[in-house]
Length: 310
Length: 310
Image 1 (tube, each protein chain N blue to C red):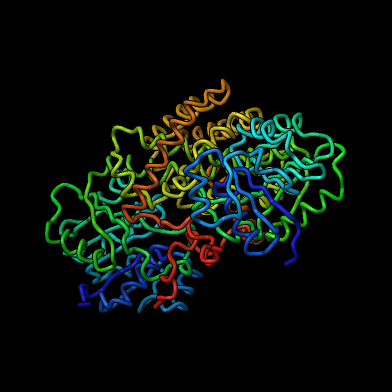
Image 2: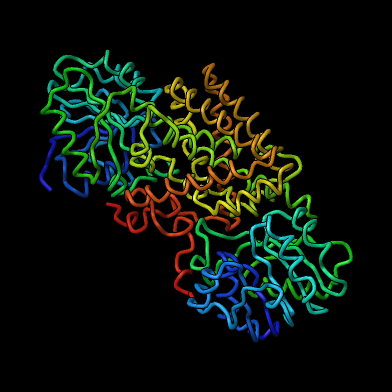
């Protein structure tokens, strides 16, 4: 791999920031990686993990002379980070982010970005339910999509350079407008997380069924939801607050559909249930065919058991 | 393993029936295994897979001289199977089932079971999203729970014998009354499946977001739900119709909680969101500690990637 940047500044070093750090180091993409995060403890941990070359609490200091700045913070903090780094950004630098909402991030960051700096909002669709600098690993972005939502007048050369960067990390790059991104993500990511948090909360609140029963018998379906519901609370609070309109629309559709299903159950309309339960199977097959999930039963949890066939 | 039964009759040979067949053969639990299913094609497939010793379309024929009969059919078919086998059941035989609802199965089957035959309703909490005789595998029940919901006057010796059988397959056995079983399963299994089917249906119906976008970007959360939503439609239609009251109660609680969450999103009440999103993390940890799910991030989908840490 050839060096693509002289100095990359990573602002925020959670799951996404630290996974980028692992890849940049492994692939030799930058001459120098500067890491910045506001928490002294997290910064210390990043240093212990050897994620970068220099470690600074001040984001303003960290971005100095960086030709690529990647902001990986909860979306609610995007505005304050942009304000903090504005004065020290190098002319010609690319500033990008990894936030799960795009219209809000653009509204928060763009006003602070100086002339001559290339602001390219981005969102790699990758992650796990773990968070913090210890959660990152090399290869997280392989086969995953990274969506750019470029603002008007974006320099094509800067765009190509950032695309090249994500492709080096194994990602495939797509472009769309921020409003469309926010709608798409509301259904493929935000709604699933909210529903997962909600069902786990409902189970936690029951009186007739104990929490220990919920845990003991969780393998019959419930446990699947607990993974998403174990995701970073700060990140997801911010997503809910910053993609409100699209999320409320999807929630309203979901609830409407659920009322239809509930009514079919109440009135014993088996044909309506069967129709839906059949239709949804096809989507799973398409996802597997598209290489976006594993084909192994139960996400491969039964590893090493299938071969025991008699 | 010692022989526990002279002849086991497996009525129904889907995922659960065929997994039992694999284990019984592997462990040498029975002198003979007789397999019966109404579909000639499925029966032929079971024979090709070598799942048993004899293959019969008639359930009545199959249960003759069997000292253990395991009914593994969609719960809506339990009554007709019980009626069909009633006259040919051997005195002293144990008849059990694997159905996901228990009050309804008891109501359907018990009236048909003759004096002197031990009817013990059971439910192994195990499975994958796959169905049919090809989906079964040895070891499916290892570390999983099997719940008995014994009826009044059950013979303790027969109960102990059936418990011993499931323990031989690696399962842990619990007992509870059928009404409580149906409430517990409504939250840990039925509600999760219904919610998963529903969200996949909602996504499938959108106009502003294309199906190909839903599939492409599904790794950001949505794909987790598609696994449960790929489960057998007949089985799940029957579960919905046969555990109606408990499911409707759980759906109503879920919707109430979701309305609270939706309102918090609309009014920007971040503290309420953060409180829920934090509380749900603890449940995931308890499930992993209880050995009911894997600890690997993302259900271990990133197999072989974590070690690449730089």
